Length: 451
Image (cartoon, rainbow, N blue to C red; front, side):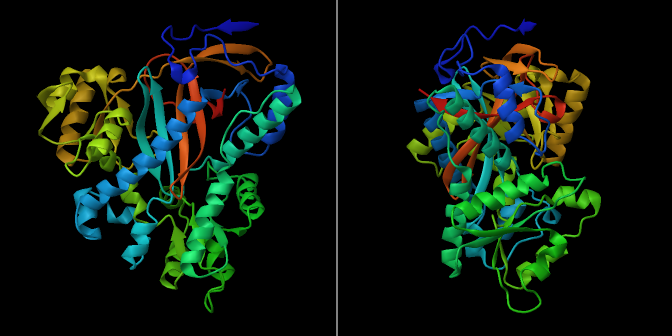
């Protein structure tokens, strides 16, 4: 039995004005068979399973990826403009020092490598893509999942005798970043993936890490994974440092919550080991940096301002101040209360949708209290809601039933070493604006390009 939910009538050229999902050319059962194999032993169950990837026209796909890299450059510039030195930037952005314990004294290294790894979250609305946030750092996850989905779709299209969808090799991009950084350090290309693996870690499995290590090795990088408690012995400390570069992919908040000791990473840095991206990435990760960029800082060129206006939704740091919205000046707290359904609040450094509150889904009294608290603390940002332009996707349930949904999607392009590196995606059946999370039942997939 197939249940049908009608897609939005005004589907845009970004999704090719499709009224039907793209024709894959293979039976759903065969698609599921290949997907089961490629997605085995990863972090999320195979079902519910999207029977098509999200597919953009070629021109739109490359525009999205180019915009990801270009906006990350501007985020870095905005961070540099907040103050003249590290301490000033931390103060200007209201960063908690406890959240960034991995700085190294070499500020040039910190600034060169602060934007090395990022994953944006993008909602494609009726006017095209809007970058609702950037997760800058090494712990955003999803690269192995993207690789598995992309490889599955390559196999599916080969079996169907159809042209492959177009994507990007995420491991090639990561390998180029490692190779370039090792050349800077004057050592052969090698990297230690520093990350935790355990029941308490929602992002990793043994296969997740194996895919990354094997992917780097396939591109000429000597790579291996080390747990935090293995790190010092693994790189030769105390004693000569055998491997000077690590990919810092462990999440500090997760580690703290379960009492995982991160001091080996700090000791390794003190002994000359280097992690990329650098700790300064946390200043780009802060949503306050994106909000400041959205406001149109004076250093932007006309071309840069056009880029921000096109791709960044209206976002503002909280405070008792006057802002401009839709051509008029407003008192910010009053604006957010009078137009509650148009806005959401986000914790500046919140992750995984944990600190996102939509005005449309909040009681007015509770919303007013959140606005008052936000103005008082200055911690969250306010952002105008971007509604997804829905598109049809067929979803197979574990029972074998196929359901057609009007997908409300969030797409997540990667950027590694300044180069776009593919795009993960997730979607839920369209309802009303809200957080789209796999933890709440959203379907994970990938975004690719087709003719």
